[in-house]
Image (tube, rainbow, N blue to C red; front, side, top):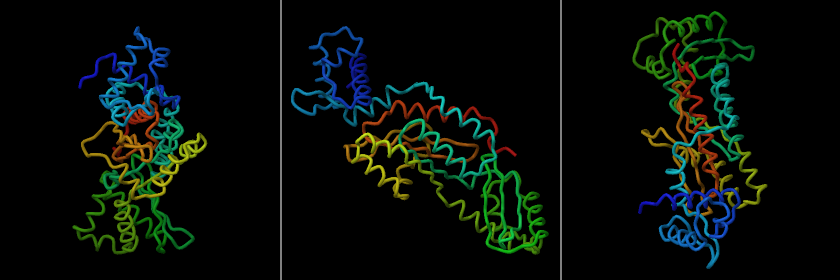
Length: 332
C-alpha cells in the first residue's frame, strides 16, 4: 500500500528517534517532536495504521512502537535516497588515493579505518578483481636474506612480493628490464596468461627462476580475497551495553568465510544496499561496491538492527563520491 506523505513523515520520525534514543515512540512523544499539526488521537491512528501495514510493532499493549525490519528497509531504500553526506572525516580519502605511494594492503586498511571512525560501527573492506590491476612499474631487488623483493606499481598502490629464492643483482636487473619492456600497461591477468600461452623460455633463460616464482605468486595473488577488519565499533557496542548484539558481530568478524559471503554484492549493483536483521539476534549490513582505478572494493558496515542507517549511508556515499572525483585510475 502506498504511504501518504504524513505516514512517511511519521515513520521517518519514529525510526530516527528510536535509532537515537532506543525508546519506543508513542503518540504523545511523536506530537512533541514532529511539526505536524495533528492531535494526539490522529497520530495514534496513524501509528496504528503503520503497525497494521507492518512498518512498526508494539512491544506491549498500550506501549510505544518500534520499527520492524520492513520499516527499516523502507526508511533506507526510500527516505535516504538523495541524501547528501557531509562527514568531513572522509576527506582523508582523497589525499590517500592521490598519494599513490601506499601498498594495496595499506590502502585497504586506511579506507576501513576511515569508514570505521566515521560511522562508529565495525567496518570491513574486501578487495577483489586483482587480475585487472594495470601494471605501471617493476623493481626486482636481491636481499641479504637470500630472498628477492618484488615491487609492482599500479595506479592504486604497490604490490609487495617476497620470493623465496636466491638471485644475483644482474639476474634481478635483467628480470626488471624484461617485465618493464613487456608488461607495463598490461594487467596482472595478462601477465600470468602470457606464460601459459607464449614460449618465452629462451628470452628468460638467465632469470627463469625469478619469473617462475613471480608468476606463481601473482596467480595466488589473483585468487586472494583481501580483507581488512576494523573492530573498534563493536567494542563501542559493548561499552553501550548491547552485549548480545556485539557478541554476534564479533562472531561474524572472526569468520572470514562468513564475512566474504556478507560482503558479496550483485554484479549489476553499483549503489548502497542494506541487509536488515530479521530479529535482534542477527546482523544488519550496509554495503557499497566501489572502485579505486581497476581495484574492486566492497565496503561493509556491520551493526544491529537498530543501527544508524542514515549516518552509515552518508559515510559510504561520501567515500564513493571522493573516489569518483579522483582522476588517475590505473592509466600508465
